[in-house]
Each structure stands twice: as structure tokens, then as C-alpha cells.
Length: 222
Image 1 (cartoon, rainbow, N blue to C red):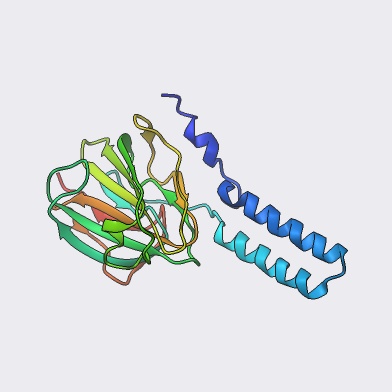
Image 2 (cartoon, rainbow, N blue to C red):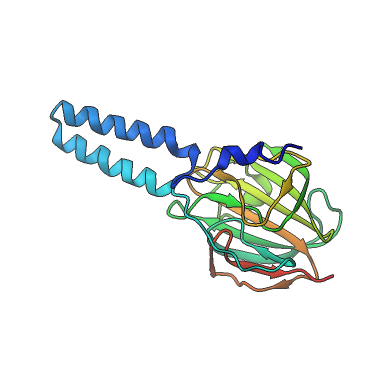
């Protein structure tokens, strides 16, 4: 595995690279409207440019998590913490932490714990509102199975939402992942589910606001 392969795609700039075509298109439209003397339209396109830039922003994050701690893969609000009987890749019970990402949240996704990417599974599906109870089962989604450096299995799922129609995931099976590094994003409002061993110590509650790469969701136990 070439360490730099997927990391070249997410090399940091102030906004996510996935958003550059949208931002440049909005800027170009603003310029054309201004040249044609359409003041009201120019203001509208300028506002749209700022809104798109805000959505695709990609701020740096500082992490102080330990080796046995799981950090949030996404910005958003905790909408559910519950036990599930099994999870894809792992035929055993797990704790599921669900994060709803509103259109105002940063949508760049970050690695929850250092380890190797053991499995990937993309599934087409519906586009229910991401905070809907059925979204985890029926929506389009992408599963990542990470085996931590200590051998503990963690699964995270990128789930498309009502208007989120593009799931982006850069790494491939076999890649080594480093906690908090960027690995993808979901466009325009979505959800992420994190599955950890059932004996994990949960450190967040429903309603908490979390930040990708900074907020510790739980602590893994041997």
C-alpha cells in the first residue's frame, strides 16, 4: 500500500476539494452577473458563493484522544446511542452511536481510531431524512471496518440524507488509517453511525454536539 495514495486527495486547503467546482461555478456566475450589470442577481450569486463556501469549509482540528478512545468522525448532534444485536462485518452485538449532520455542520469526515481498513461496503438505497429512525437501514450508505492497532474492531457508516446524494470515501481496503485524518465527506446534510464493542464506555449522550477529530465519543475496554 502506498501511504500517500488517498491522502493526496484530501491534502488540506481551507475548503474540501470536493466543493471547489461548486464554489468556482458560483464565483463565475457572480462575475458574469456583475459584468452584465445585474446588481440584484450579482448579490444573490455572491450570497450563494459564501453559503457554498461555508458548507464545504474544512477547518483544522486538535485532538488529545488516547489510543483506546474513539473520536467523532463527523460534526453534528448525537441523535441516538443504543445497543444493536449485530453489525455488518462483525456477527456480534455492538453499541451504535448515531450523529446527525445538518447542512450547517462541517461535512468532512475523519478517522475515529488508528488502525487498518479491513473492509468496505457501499450500498445503494433511499434518501430519507438522515435523522429518521429508518435511515440507518434503508438509506444509501458506505460502511468502513477498521481494526485498531490494539486489535479491536470498529465500524463506521456514512449514510446519505434527504438531499445528500454523494458519499465520498478515499481510502481502500488495506490502507493504514491514522486517527483524526480526513477520509471523505457526504454532501449536503447527512448522518454517520459508529459501532463499537458493547463493553465500551460511552462518553456522550443524545443531544450533545460533537466535532469531527476532537470530541471523544467513547473509551474502548479490553
